[in-house]
Structures are given as C-alpha cells and as structure tokens.
Amino acid sequence: MPQVLAGVRVIEVAQWWFVPAAGAVLADWGADVVKVEHPVAGDPMRGLATSGIAPQTGGVNFMVEQPNRGKRSIGIDLANPRGVELLYRLVAGADVFLTSFLPAARRRLGIDVADIRRVNPKIVYARGHGQGPKGPDAEKGGYDAASFWCRGGIAHALTPPGAAAPVMQRAAFGDSTGGALLAGGIAAALFQRERTGTAPVVDLSLLGSAMWIMAPDIIATKLLGVDLPATDRTAPPNPIVNSYKTQDGRWLFLNMLQSDRNWPELVEHLGHPELATDPRFADARARFANRAECVRTLEAIFATRPLAEWRERLGRIEGVWQPMQTPRELNDDVQAHANGYLPAVERDGKSFTLVASPVQFDEAAVPLGPAPDMGQHTEEVLLEAGLTWEEIGACREAGAI
Image 1 (spheres, rainbow, N blue to C red):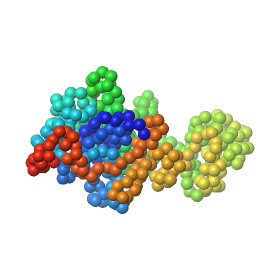
Image 2: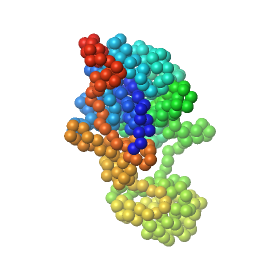
Image 3: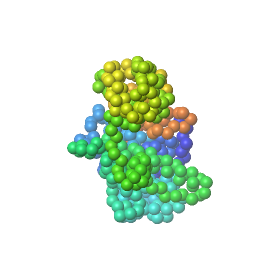
C-alpha cells in the first residue's frame, strides 16, 4: 500500500479507543505515530482484559491491538515537569499533536493548544471530544455508548417501541467511526498546511459523529415536528427493501430500491415467475397498495429454503441483497479476504487478524504490525529527539520516563 503519509510524525497523547483509533488509521497510511503513555499505568485500555471487562483471547489483547497497531510507545509521566519538557522535545519535530485529554487536564499538564503551539507553531493540533469544544458540556468527558449511541439518537432510533430496555451498541462502535472521521480531518489539515503554511486545529466529537450518521432522521423530524415512526417490516412501503427469514432461521435483506426494475428478476430466481404479472404485485403502486400481502407472500417463499440455497439462487441477480452475517462469519467472508480487510499480524510467534482501516490507495491492502508494548520505544524515540544516554538516564532517575 502506498505510504501516503510517509514522513509525517504524530505525537499521540490519548487513551481508550476513540482518538487512538485515529492514530491507528494515520499509522496505516504511513505516518510515524508515537503513543505517549504513563510509564507505569499505560493506556487504561491495556487493563480491560486483565480486569475481566474484555474477554481473554489466548494472550491477544485485541482491545489494545486494533486501535494501536503500527505505533511506537514511549512512557512519559506528564505530571512530572521534566516529563512535559521531554514531550515538548518530541512536539518540536512533529507534524500532528493528537489528544483525547479533557480541557482541564490539558491546561493542568501544559499541553493545550497554546502550550503546544509555543513549541511548534505549525503543528496540526487535533482533539477528540465527547460533546464538542463549545457549549455547557464541553468540559465533560464522554464514551461512545453515552455520547455517540445514546445522546446521538442512535439508540432511540434502533430500539423497538415498547421494548423492555434500549438496544445498546457493541464495543467501540462509535469510537471506530469517530476515529476514522478524525483521521480524515487530520489529513485535510495537513493538506491545508502544505498549501497555505497555516495549520488548523481539528476537532471531532462523538456527538457530532452520531449526528452525521443520523442526519436523515434529525433533518426530517425537525421538518415534520415529530419523531419518525419505527419501521414496520410487515408492511414496508417497498416490500423488496425488507428482511426475510430463511428455512434454517437465518435472515437476509433485500435492498432493491428500483422496485419495478428488480421485481421480475427477483421473483424468477425465487422460482415464482408468475408473481411478475400478478395484478396484486405487478408494479410498485400495486405492491405498495398490497404491501402486507406481498410481504407475507415473500415470507412464505423464503421460508422454504435454507440460506445456502438462497445464496446460490440469488447470487447472480442485479438487485442488491445480502445475508445478515455474524461477526464470526465475517472472518471467512471471501470479499473481506479478497480485499485485504482482515490482515494477519504476528506477535510473539502468534498469528491473529485485525481489521484494516477502510480506505485503500491504488487498490493495495494495508499491511499491519502489532501494537507496541507499553513504553517499548522510549529510549529509541528519545535518542531520535536528540537526547544522550546520560540525559535519558537522568530522566529515568527523576521518574519522568
């Protein structure tokens, strides 16, 4: 894969998944990402497996590997004045400063925008937020389940009316989305700096990311003055934009927006060509008028065969459809492997897969390396910054590294 950000140095002072995921994407694109961690505690994400919050997976701490692959780690205590001075040494030769720290912590540690810009006026300063850099909640923290999923309206939209509890997101769902968006913003800021010499401050929040995803609902509800009703799959406006259950209890989803174009081919491959001219379903208007009956008819047909047979029968039709796969099945998806979406990574003689960042250049898959051990590259990075071994030893004695 072309290293489109080769030569770009990123200093990452961030924890958990959201903002580190942006650093991972930048590393995928060729940037040298130096992750700054506390020299004893490290990124708290490292403790999720041992604390029982994340499952044990044979020694692979996947919650660390996925958002931190390809980086280098340096252990610096930013609460130590000498540690902050070391950070400034790194910042002086960097292109991007990337952080998830809250405003109060940034001010206390001396790593806010003005502090970093005093050291390097042309650095791109990038911040990840829960709710954005302005407003009454700008100083408050946020995780994706709260700021993205719940406050951002996604949980409400996906929870059926009358449900006993809200539908909740899977791990790092909003973090991965926000991280990718933040990486794109950083790349755009680097482009502006290249063109104009001016480096902007980049801000991305979990709330803003969710609102971008929920834009159709947010816009429509404002115009209509009411929340949009939950989707009723028993009577959708277009019966071939709907989910159907197969004989073996699996689901597939028809996503055929061009109803009149797709209907004849679909029913032929379902083994019921007579439905193409059935007056109840002959065109989109008729199918809308008889949508509940059309759904029941399709339900009965799909229930006659297992998913594997429907894959075969519908595999060559023009209309869009897909099976509802499990995350485990995606590990064997032929398209995922053909496009390099699941690259293998080696760590300590053990091979495992991670998920590649979605953007590719020149159709080349992204080769990935493992996440660094905490503080693995401390001496290496400090030597590159111009420190001598004697200075490094003094920093260690002072507890700064």
